[in-house]
Length: 130
Image (cartoon, rainbow, N blue to C red; front, side, top):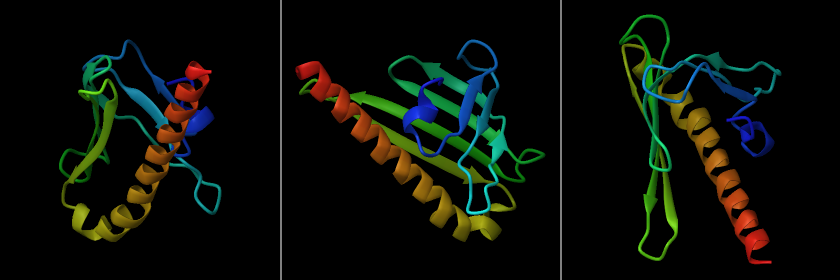
């Protein structure tokens, strides 16, 4: 988590409030919008398997109002590489009202993070090969 703000445009800061395991809270500060404001939330880790999966659940207020379950999967490939899969599953009564924003802004943030992660991995591979 400490290095994420160095390369991840979607994260201003992210800190686990204890060992990275089910039940741990994370304090996440997201990217600044065009007015300089950030999004802050404190999801709870649902699963943390090193080099395999990280899953958390964030909520806006009460359960089923607006819940977002975020998942990162690392899948080993036969050629020795790794496939990175990022997913977010939204549910709750506010989701239909926020769908346009989720599809536009949230998706753009995920794409930006994926692109930055790919660039970081490729740079590290070039450095290791040199």
